[in-house]
Image 1 (spheres, helix red, strand yellow):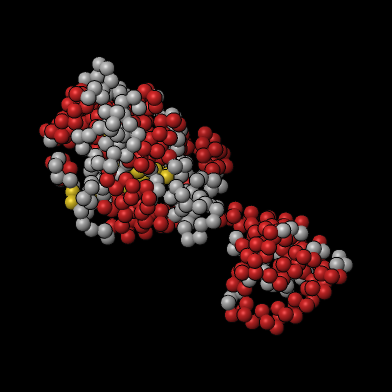
Image 2: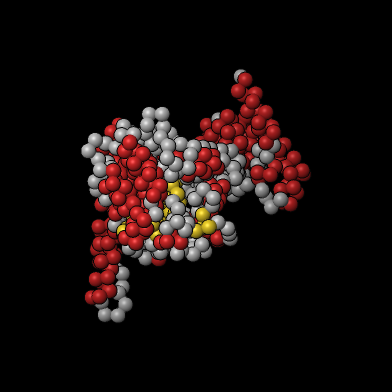
Amino acid sequence: MLYITSTGLLTSDPRLKDCMQQIHQAVQESVGTAMMDQELFRKCVGSNIVLLTQAFQRKFIIPEFEAFTSLINHLYYNTQAQKGGKVANYIPQLAKFSPDLWGVSLCTVDGQRHAIGDTNLPFCLQSCVMPLEYALAVHEAGTEQVHKYVGKEPSGLKFNKLYLDEEDKPHNPMVNAGAIVISSLLKMMDYLKKMAGREYVAFSNATFQSEKETGDRNYAIGYYLKEKKCFPSGADMMAALDFYFQLCSIEVTCESGSVMAATLANGGICPITGEQVLSAEAVRNTLSLMHSCGMYDFSGQFAFHVGLPAKSGVSGAVLLVVPNIMGVMCWSPALDRVGNSIRGIHFCQELVSLFNFHNYDNLRHFVKKLDPRRQTGHERNKSVVDLMFAAYSGDVSALRRIALSAVNMELTDYDTRTALHVASAEGHLDTVKFLTHTCKVNPNAKDRWGNTPLDDAMQFGHNAVVKVLQEYQSIYTHTLMPEELRSDMCPDSTMDTEELKSMEALESLV
């Protein structure tokens, strides 16, 4: 079980329920320590074989999960040092939280889980419920019906401003006016529990009563919306407001909130139950609006610096979605001047500084950022295959592209043969010249049979290649070898990058 949990799966994962029951039953029936023989193993994993095979083969979206979470923990502790801000005090139930509370939980689209800090303390969603509310409305009523009553544009104003767009509609569903109108369209709330994979979702009646007692501005917004006929025909404004207050008073933890975010990241399918909770259309529209309107008056800055859909609430929550990868819930009650969690914002910024999660990060040519989706062994294997095939084919252009991608040109295959071995055996003179004079690879490398590239060229009678290799061996031994040894045999350090680039430029002109 230790190996399974190291991949990010929790033993409480609903998908592992049968497996855990079988193990528990085996322990109960055994005398002393239960031994996992082949028959018992098959019995335990039989109903979960697909999921467990993915785990054992590290086929999840983040294959090296332990390494990834250690970096997340590092970001968490760095962010914990952020001080300042004030806890929201306009509602007594919010004011009671300590500004020192800080938790981060994440859930990937494969159901890998990680939590650190105060992740089991319940807190109210507040405005974080708005994207969930909107997604449910679109799922039930459709995009066209919902946007008869609410717009799609950022307002450029405070979230609780008494103001409508030029069509007398709330600007978007992420401000109070828009959320109140959306409330009048909704009938079911079971969706929230489905989105959280049936994990902790509760209702805080004390917060609800506080919201009603201190909700004068929201009542004013409600009457203004009613005057402008923003509600659907037959809708009860007071009932919609009550429902809106109830939604803001829904309680989650960081852990259940991260599953909600992961459901959005996974196209509306809850990653730990496999249930289709929301339509793809609802998720797409929701993420688009979260990206442009989700962070109060900081939305533009957040979209610029973080580049990911997110929604904040005055409880200190930040619900962050990394599409097709994971959902994150950050919670720290200390807020900045516009109502966003100081630590939550800082964590999101640091996350995209370390990983290539920003919507517009280049996934092919990034240099400084990490990609946790990459399988290290798989990448090396692909590089070896590409390198050997290019050498076998005599494809100098392909070799040049590989070299410019900072691939080690001395990578070896299962027979410890290098690209120079292969090119020499095939008699590709131009390829041999490129690998030696441009890439400056080691000509003395030996394969599993003890042969050098020169031995291969001589064996197959490629005299022109033999001559080039003999000349290069002399140059390498007298000029390059000492430099290589001083730099710990690093082949990349001797590669003439400028020459490679100039050759590439010349090739493009031909």
